[in-house]
Image (tube, rainbow, N blue to C red; front, side):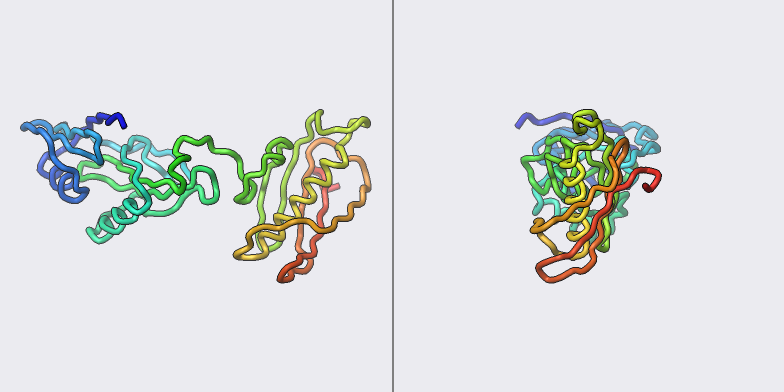
Amino acid sequence: MHPFHLAFPVDNLKDARAFYGGLLGCPEGRSSDEWIDFNLFGHQIVAHLAHGEAQNDVHSDVDGKKVPVRHFGIVLSMSEWEAMADKLKKAGTQFVIEPYIRFKGEVGEQATMFFLDPSGNAIEFKAMAHPDRLFAVMSKTYFGLEIPFLDFLGVEPEFAENGHSRIRLHLRPELLNSFHVAHGGVVMSILDFAMAAAARSSHEHILGVITIDMTTNFLRPSKGILIAEGKVLKAGSTVNYCEGSIFNEAGQ
């Protein structure tokens, strides 16, 4: 590991020493009347006395929450993160974002929390559900599942809840047949997934579903944008009976 170096402004060195050295448990290194070195899990952070420079008035939307754009922190193991979250809660820390798990079911699933130091610097402590995925590219998921075939088709998931699902597909030239309309295999594929998503959404702790029988009736050629809906007609303990339909944006 190559330790990083980060310098940041604080309004009061005494408060910074109590927060970083006391609450967060960062060993103190060199210091002067103007700055203090701290060891943040093997990395060098330096609090410099600079009144009024720590500002956090710009935010960005991440996973539906307002994240301070200017922030720093550390990636911990999950056990370290849980211990730190518990410690901060017991100390009465006012969180900007309460400890929680974000990007659930995705390649970047992680535990995170945001809080401020006494000067207003935003800090994030996080832990990856799978540490080896820290730099993994966020791929699209389909109601919590990674399905490469649907990536290829270009399926856009809309919702899957309470036994009802809806997905969308913009037909590209490579998805058409010799009549320049949607290939039947494409139509059946998105119908299959829409019904499977509906079935999965009707059970709280379902692991997965497979299709054991499927009958499809083609009523008219499909062009443009296709919208597929799946519905559970009857949910059983091992078998779900579903129906699916495909229509265009005009509902035809």
